[in-house]
Every structure is written in structure tokens, then in C-alpha cells.
Length: 109
Image (cartoon, rainbow, N blue to C red; front, side, top):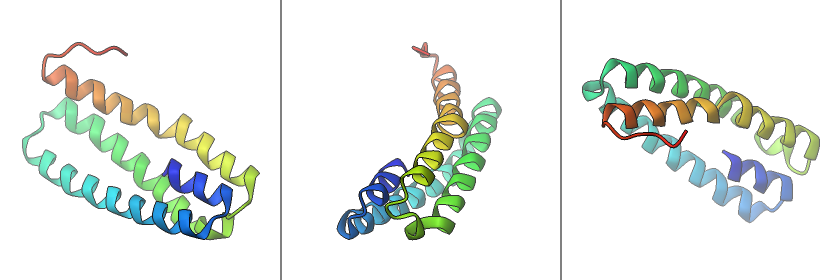
């Protein structure tokens, strides 16, 4: 998502299309992996994953809704990127911690 926002900020059609394609591929891979994890992951991991997935989906929805209309609009793009860093990425980090804990690996966090 961050790469797509950066591409929109720089207003390059080639970069925007490539970043959007990468975003869609990453989202599809995440969705498939999440579906598989639901069958085998323990509850603490599933809970952290569910929260992260919800936040990722909400951010993705906002970005897709606004998408190319934001091209070159620095302030709006920065606000979305700030939101990712404050309201999404910390929960993805918590998911990582839960997964590492389940595997018995100490976290650096």
C-alpha cells in the first residue's frame, strides 16, 4: 500500500500501474494465506491476524476508493500514509509477535 501511495505522490502513470498491480497481487496472496491460517493457527495468532486483516482491509478500501484521484495530491497522500503507520502497521507487527510467540521464538519488539 505504501508503494502505491508513493507512486501516486510522484504522479507517474507507469509506477502507479505497476504499484497497483503489486498491491492487488499482495492482497490476493494475503487473503489466500489468511484462509489457510484459519484452519491451523492457534487462537492468539488468529485473533491478532483478524485484527490486522480488518485494519488492512479498511485501509485498502480507502486507498482503492480514492485511488488515482489522489495522484499528485501530497497532503492527502501523506495523511493516508500516516494513517497506515499509526492504525495499520502496528497491528501487523502484533500479528508477527503472536506468530513468533506461538513458534517459541523471542521477539525483538
